[in-house]
Structure formats: structure tokens, C-alpha cells
Length: 32
Image 1: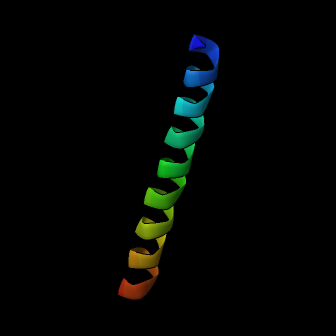
Image 2: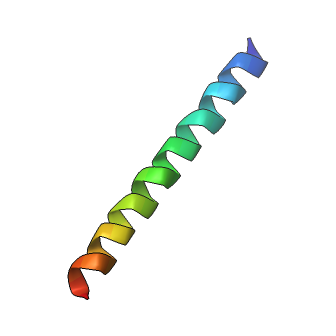
């Protein structure tokens, strides 16, 4: 099912983005 795969791909991408933002914020707070 293409739609199901696409939905999972988008969800995974959003999760990865959140992890990158979280890691970036942690590094930013550590520097200050």
C-alpha cells in the first residue's frame, strides 16, 4: 500500500526532525 508507506515515511521524517531540533537545542543551551 503506497499511501501507508508514504504516511509512515512522513511520520519518520517528522520524528527525525524533532530529534535533530532537540539535539541542537541541547547543544545551544550547553554553550550558554
